[in-house]
Length: 294
Image (cartoon, rainbow, N blue to C red; front, side, top):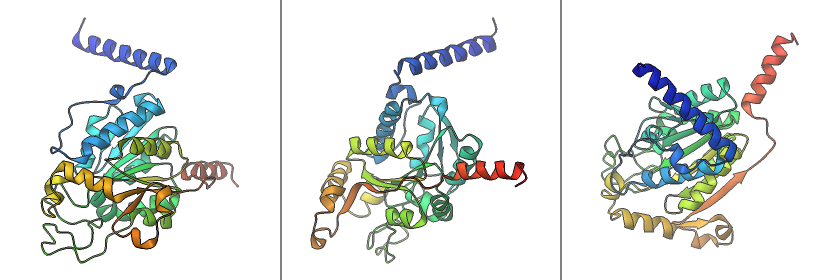
């Protein structure tokens, strides 16, 4: 027996194993893991990846029923650590690639993993138009407030007065409120969480995937190296405590007086609307109409 034949048999056995697990509803987080993640110590991406694995186990679909598309940046390395259909695309171009995948295979769960710079600067136009179309993508934006991989430059999500290598005296531009931007552009599910609130983050990923339409999940994350050092935020533990102390569950946020909201932000499902036409369904209807000559 040749090595190619053995490889083919092993692949077929793995498919059978996955199918049996599907029948018995026995997928676990480890079924979606691949490789050894390599991020800086204390990087929030480690915590997010664990939350994603847990969420996918709850969804319970076979690995080949999911597609993960990433751009370029620290966050986008995650696609290499997931045993799904994956594409590690170009900088700022994860959403258009994901749009093509979803149009070609609408039954796939299509998830975009992107960073604050990747999504809102280089990929900003793609982001707002995907929201407008309400295409059934789940877009997770790792918001660590900086370009962590390419040298610590500021992004559109870098907080006002914060420092970066390209803003050594502090950021003078106001940062985006990404949730409000997505809502205004047409997204039908908008949520925010932090990597400190790992269980909530996992739950929000599940809700985003289950929602029919464009879903944004902003994952507030820590970058102890590029952001933390420049802004004297301390190490990984201190940055996690900052998330704990400044994030407010949305039910409590709604009861907070305006003066107590200063410096804090709400987490949870911030906006959701059902029943709006989803893009791939609208596109299929258009094709049927054109083929029918109407």
